[in-house]
Image (cartoon, helix red, strand yellow):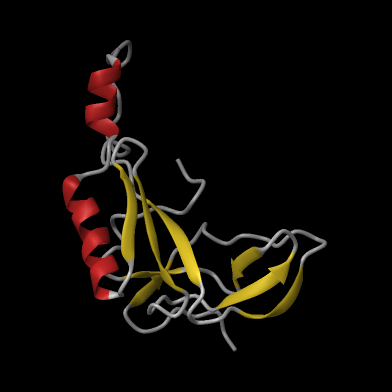
Length: 141
């Protein structure tokens, strides 16, 4: 089966993760198992080119680079629509942690792998089309 996100979701290039070499799949995740997902938001100032020699105070940097309120609102709306709970919101880190059952309408098929209770998506994560401009792949700047 092709690695294609469901309708209404867009592939989030850069979010693929390789399993450790010694991990082995032990089966699908129980749909009622409680999981947490970290959503990383884009840097609203990333498209702006800093002026040479420009220095920002910590407060100025934080203000310019923290998550946009509208991006946070989109993630919260997504969570509510998919029966997920917002566990943590950190605008400065541009991170929102969502929690809920594994079957909460998420596009990735989750599989359990044996190696320190590891849960991994079995295909590349997809992002709700309404969120695609607000999020970034994990590990991206």
